[in-house]
Image 1: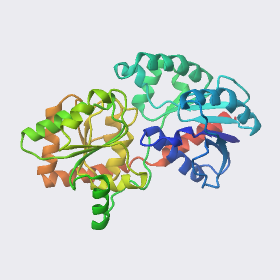
Image 2: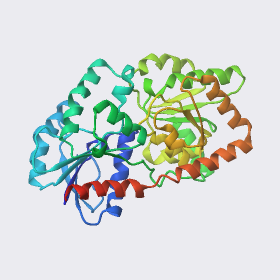
Image 3: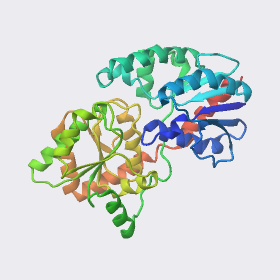
Length: 371
């Protein structure tokens, strides 16, 4: 079969969907020796894997969001037909309105705008309410990334359980315990102007991620006389303007980096003392897994998919229980034995998430559609 992959999201950084797509592209060659793969991607993205056939998406002067809908619905169907694509696979829900001989497999990572309406504008919610149901209807199979996300999708989008499967994320092998040399440590600390000891957060800085909890926990620790720094890496998302001034007020102990180089991220995880992720909802929570894979103790919330990912390998509490989070961070800094125990448990839990299960299930979905 010829399988086409919608890889437009490779042009984004530090979003879970981008890292998910990158992992898939890396591992398809190892798990599928029979099907032929085509990648639809923007012209500025690398084409260094000979396993794939690359189909270029030219950049446009139109705003990206407008052009992407135009490309999806008016350009892509012709490319699918021209290249005799049997299955169109997208990690981001949307498929062309036009139907053809090909079949569609989509990934729905979560039901965020249904479960967490308050963190999205009315217009954005309506935009997805209009576009997602038709894509679900035109899909032949749906994949998602946790049992929690699957149950939400079934509930809110009325998807038949027979049409959807969950398969857990895994991390790139670069996320692992690394002995960062003194020279590299010095270089990275200087490059990003960060302290040698810090609590880490990686994700989009938006209301759903509960950045306010990080600020409040920092205040609590400071009131106890603990000088603990927080480093936040991520783009400014929905609601960031509400906390921007508050972050600036705490600039002596909270450092915000819009982005870091992809090659530096694994080392920064390894330099961090603790990973703090007080989110309100996650379809999976890939940064948690990346952190645990690097051997960092995690402090996080106990909602949505997070218990599936963290197991008993981290401290989990109510997303608004700032005192609990502060106490956990304080204990980890003060109790070396506890810290070592949680570090080992993080690695042990993270190692349960491998590409085997996910990739085999996904390839099996493709193959079953050919029968």
